[in-house]
Image (cartoon, rainbow, N blue to C red; front, side, top):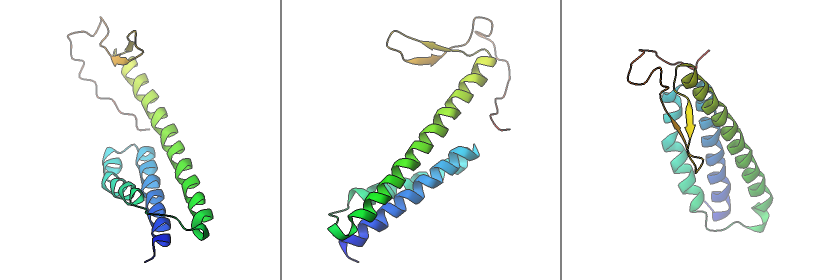
Length: 126
């Protein structure tokens, strides 16, 4: 297989892995998301080993890179929404986010729930 087609195969693998990550995030099932980890790591390593891209393949490579960037954007949006949902669930159950001077957020039990266990199980599934 020529180095030119290796770039396209590697980028197609990366896009497939990113789509699987997105599906894992959307499903809300941690097992689905964890199952994507090895595939994503292998795809990223394969992209990192691309030696060169021929002028004939550059248009297709740019299209695959744009597709990867769009997939990353969707993953980021879904991940941020998931984080906000988790923060909301924690806040409702007495664990609000507290921000320090550097802007770092930590989850702290409220005074009402400090030192007690409520036995509440959080679920973000609908």
